[in-house]
Length: 484
Image (cartoon, rainbow, N blue to C red; front, side):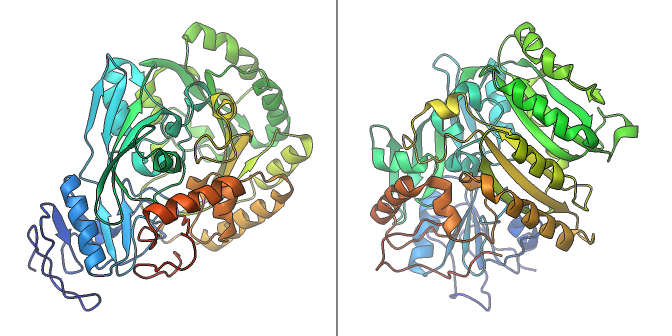
């Protein structure tokens, strides 16, 4: 087999005859390349798409060259950062994948508390570098999540109640536009575009680097999960509701309903047992956190309490092995209000009805600094919601749980309809009703996003995403088949 060299790509039966990309110095991977199948694979193993070409960039100039090449050949564009999106929008059929996975550099200025992060970096890369200086910014709760996708959708994580969403800590972006141009985008430079990029997803260009504000965090924090038996979930969830009503911003919590994963820190006799788990991370002095968490830890005699001083970096990666690359995922999600008794009844009635031991529901406590920023100040929508819940069917290749747990997810989601308050755009799947993208923002924010989209990408070049379409009358570049 002939392996294409930089600037060369062999021809395929579909798509235009291609001989290379002028000015491209990275790797070009087409269907006859030995690495094609691994290069087109993304985190969600249920996604199986075959791009015409994968352009693995090593710098901004490569991204510019790839965008211009795609435009010249009328190819649809997918953008891959971490490839972690459940909808699989990082890869497309027949078009070109602009792959930033080789661009993972992170530079930290500890004196100014800033970090510069390339567009293909993962959150584990960021935490590794920033925690060397006792600094962090809000990132995901899984270390192999991509920085770009999580940030552009908003950025939910353990630190958000204290330090805001990831987009609330975003200072500037370097962006390749739909015409292959380069822009630096900030509050002072293209402020309309900067507003849109803070929550509007990958609709506006290819981000080659981010500049973030950092905060003193750790390197040791008070963190860990507390586990209760599933039969106690309704009572414990009511106690949790009362507990978080007065919780300080320093406390981030995520409630997980499912089986206890077979982690080494969990005793074997609890592995795969249905449990309600509350993960906690206190972004403040450990002694203070011990006092704050004491009432929750004393609630209803937990099966296991693993809260204790822990490296922040380690806690950020503690769940990595429960959401493995290549497993199959199907999600539904919504924002929720305060946990009224009738809402708790619906959650606990459905949460443990899945078939796969790997399926789960996860509920993130919002409020705090997330809510204190005005609605519409950034493109992230629904800041007044109290919780975000995601219902996640998970099964491995060869297992027969897929149809049953996809049905479980849809039934659970339907039961939550009376309580729905919008949705976090990063939790949207690949088969959503088109109206759900508008639901992620609300009418006023969505309409403003359309205005920005029409200005910066009037032909909808960047449409392999949770798409915000430009105003009517524009031409869409490349294939438009809905993702599957």
